[in-house]
Image 1 (tube, rainbow, N blue to C red):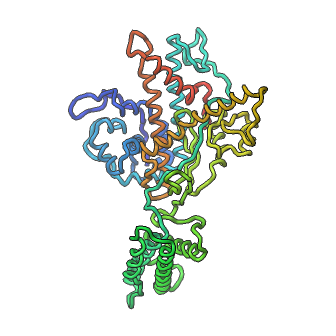
Image 2 (cartoon, rainbow, N blue to C red; image 1 turned 180 degrees about the vertical axis):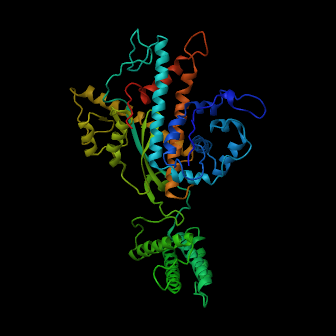
Image 3 (cartoon, rainbow, N blue to C red; image 1 turned 60 degrees about the vertical axis):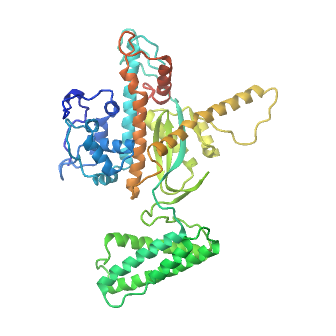
Length: 525
């Protein structure tokens, strides 16, 4: 059950500090709280909640704020709760009216939060951030217009009209769309066929022990000590040969097949008729289904002398994780979800998240259409890796008047005196496009090095997806804080406040021109 309450930001004077002092308005959490669209995010979050049934839920401001704190500071669930309990600035950020020296909620609530926040919720969050960016840019444009300074946008104000009353210019193409794909690595042990089979065998032995307690009689032979010894004799070798590894896999496959047959006989004894309750608990029952699939895959690859199969399981605890062959230096294979990202200016949006490896070139048309849905127009140019430049994608972009910033197909044109200047200009344009595509790679580096995008610790598929999308949500909020809020806080009057240097003005204007075009943006819900 939800409680109707406004999520608007409290003033600093209203927050009651235990020591009687006031909070610093220049604190980073105070600044971030000013630009987060709390009411819009709370409305999206509360749509999944019942208005009249169940216990009263935690406020949406508290839940969303705690999620931002967790990924901004790279904390565990337990540490996030303790950090909020200890710091008044964080309590102000999540909407508390006064300092309270007790945990805001139990850490296990984070799991339920991640289960509740699906892809639709985060897409609505992204749109709320876009709306907030538009609002902040319009305030910036209004201030510049009221001071009589030149505004580089398409906003035009008459002499008799106010700064808010502007003439909107119809725009069909604007901005650059950067796109690329990466893998959000799960925190799983590096999988090997031998290690996976040994883990499945150990689980089957625990199932036999549990079923034997219910059936009684003679316990089936498992040869667990011998199987463990044979596994260690191979795994402890510094450089085991292919023949030795294959022999170890054959031994573990045989032990696992024997244990699964014993489990089947014991289940038939405990469940003589269909419809009877399953004798194993929920966790062991889930693991029983998984290890059967592991045995089928490993036995098939051993008999076929192959090293690949469809929907290959690489982790028993996380069977949804798949190997993704990337061909990167030092990391030829990654294990996690593959994320396709579209980036506009400094804002990055997750357009597709899949646990199966896919060719990202098939996402280009869908990403361009999502760009138009968010902003109301198509991009002028697409900056992407060469894999996106398929013939079908180029034809579709050409039909829609969009330039693809990549190397053209076919043989390089022959340079003559007549086309020398044109060829040099095209090469110069391609070099500029390649440099302009660097920010999307930097965004991946920021996510992996600064927000642990390569260390996803959630176990379920749904919670892992929420984890990945939360990281991109926080990075977008940090982009707004870094580039938009300083402009709103500084006054342009030469006699009041701080003076804005030319380089800082140029930096902010460049970001706003790339990412936020107020009068051309018409977000479509």
